[in-house]
Length: 137
Image 1: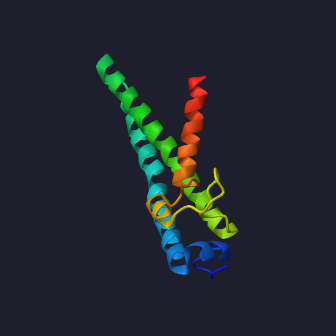
Image 2: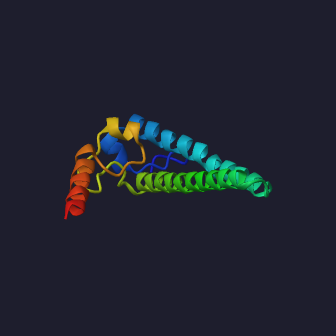
Image 3: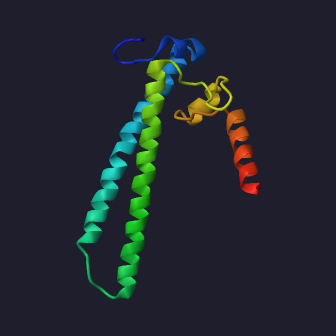
């Protein structure tokens, strides 16, 4: 471990360097803090929509569309939070930066752009090809 502030496994540091590991860790923490507010904001907006019952059919349809939009946003935000949490767990376990598909090291450039990713560029392409083949059948 790297200390109390940065619980990053030595394997991650060896793969990426101490400086890059800390940089990615901070990005994940910052994104998690940003994302943690999104579901609450959407829930608050939903609760205000719930108080506005009545109106004509157009108003009711508009409210239903807004509710659907907020609900979708909440689900996406919760999925993102889950990905970020798992990335932080992988940092602690030492498996961060290893592609789930190929087992190869994920480039720092890709991790910097998408710090919660579990796929290298090659792994993402392989997975897309596999999905396309399954759909074609």
